[in-house]
Length: 451
Ligand code: SF4
Ligand code: SF4
Image (cartoon, rainbow, N blue to C red; front, side):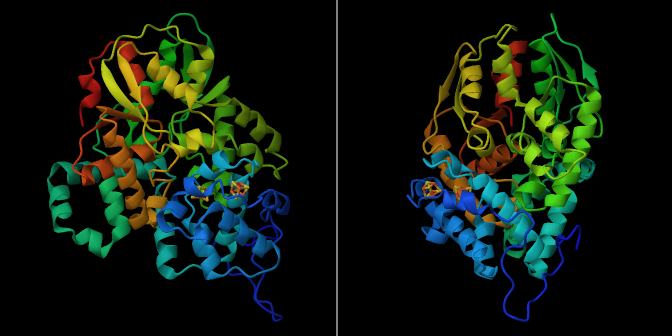
C-alpha cells in the first residue's frame, strides 16, 4: 500500500461484514460525471464493443451503469472487470454524446481502481507484466530491432505465418508478430535542427517509444517538416515514455513517474511548444494537469506543460504554410486515429494539410468513428476482437480505392497494415508527416508507395 492507496499487485482487504466495495476513496469515478449520463443511447452505435457483441454492458451506457453500481457499494466482480477491460478507450462515445458525458475521465479513474484492487489471473498478470516491461521503454524496444529485422529478412517470418502454429499456441504473441512493421535503418535524430529561413517558433519533439523504435523515419520527417516551416527543432535526449500506455491501462503511479520525467526534460529544453506525432501520446500529454493534480511539486508545471502540447498537424496549421508544396499526384484515404479525432478533436487540420498538397486527393473512409482495434495494447490483450475490428476497417479502407492510407498514429498504421495483409489487399501506408515531407522535398509519389 502506498500513500493510503493500494498499489498494482496488492490484494484488497476482505471485510468480515461482506464483500469489498468496488472502489476505494482514491479518485473513484465521479458520481456527478456518472449522473450526467441520461441513458439516451446515442453513443451505442459508435462503440466498437457494442457493435461487435450487441451487449448493453459492453456499451458506454452499460459501463457507466456498472460504475454507478460500484459507487453504490457493490463489489468489483469478475464480470464488472471484464466489461471495463473490454473498453478500447477509443472515446468515440465522448464525441457522440449530446450530454457531454466525460467518459474519458470516468474510464481512466475506473481502470486505476481495477488495476489496484482486482486480483488478476496468473496468465493475465504475466502478459501485462511483459507488455509493461517492454513497451514504455524506448531502449528495450530498440534492442528488439536487430533480432526482429533478422527474423523478417531470413524468411522465418513467412514460415511461421504459414504453419499457423504461433496463432494456436500464443495468440497474443502471434498478434505482436503480425503487427511488426518492416524495419528500415534511419540515423538517430540530432539534438537540435535550425529553422530554414526566418525562425517562427522553437519547438520540442517527442520521439516516443514505438514511434522512435519502429518508425524513426516518421520522426525524421516530422523534424524536417517543422524546420522547413520555420521552427527551431529541439529533440531532448533520454525522454523516456510519455505514460500514455500506462495511464490508459490504469497504471496511475507508473504514468505519473513517466510524466514527471518528461516535464523535467522539456522544461530544460526551453521550447514554445511540445510537438507530438503519435495521437495516443498527444492525448495523454494534454491531460498531464489532471494526472498530476494532487502533486504539489508538479501540478502547476504539468498544467503549463500540457498547454504547450500540440499535435504536428495542429502546430503546422497554427503557424500557416511558408514552405513550397510540390505536387504529389496520389489518392489518399485519411484514417482518423481515435486519440486524435475523439480525444483531441483534431480532424480538420490533417485534412487541411493534405488538401494543401497539389495533385493529392483525399477520400473519406466509411464509418470513420469506429476504432480500427489497435487502441494502445488492447489488440495484444484482446487479439480476436481486435482482428475483427481491424478487418472491418481494412474493408472500408480498401473500398475507397485509394493508393495510400494516411494516419497519425503508429498503432493504427500497424493494425490496419496487418488487417490489409490478412485480406490479401494492397495499399501503401504513411504517416501524415511523411506525406508532407515528400511534398516539401519534391520527392516522387513512388517514395511513399514502397513497402
Ligand atoms: S471508449 Fe470506445 S470502447 Fe469504450 S465505451 Fe466508449 S466507444 Fe465504447
Ligand atoms: S453516455 Fe451520453 S450518449 Fe451515451 S447514453 Fe449516456 S448520455 Fe447518452
